[in-house]
Image (cartoon, rainbow, N blue to C red; front, side, top):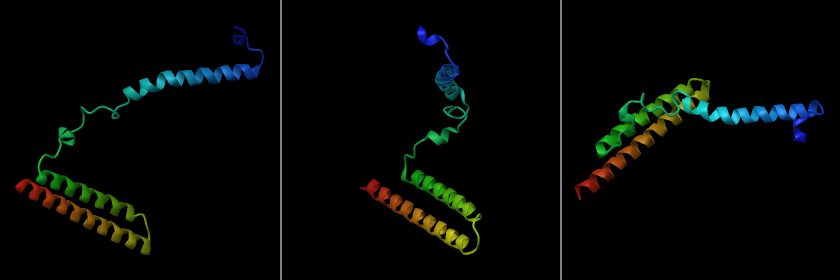
Amino acid sequence: MDWLIFRNKKGLKLISIMLAVLALLVVAPIAARSAPGLSDRSADPKRWYQEDTTPQQHWQTSLKEANAALHEALQDCKLKKGAERSSCQREARQRYQDDLAQAKESLKMAQQSASK
C-alpha cells in the first residue's frame, strides 16, 4: 500500500498516466463496438454479400470493378499537371485494358470448363 502515498509530483504524474491508460483500455472496445458503420451490415445492400455464382455474374462484377478503378485513377490524375497528368491517364487506361483482358480470359476459361 506504500505506492498509494504520493510522495512527490512525479509519483502523482505516473499514477495519472496509468489511470488514463486504464480508462482508454476500458472505453476503446466499447466505443469501437458502438461506432456506426464499422461492423453494422444491416445498412449495406444485400447484393454486396451475394457471391457471384455464374461466369456471367463474375464477368459483370469484374467489369464494374474495372470501370470504378478507371474512374478513380482518372480522378487522381486530374490533380497532376502537364506531362505527368498525360502519363498518369495513359497508365490508368492501360491498367483498365489489362483488367478487361484478364476478366475476358477468366470468363472464357470458366465457360470452357462449364461446357466440359
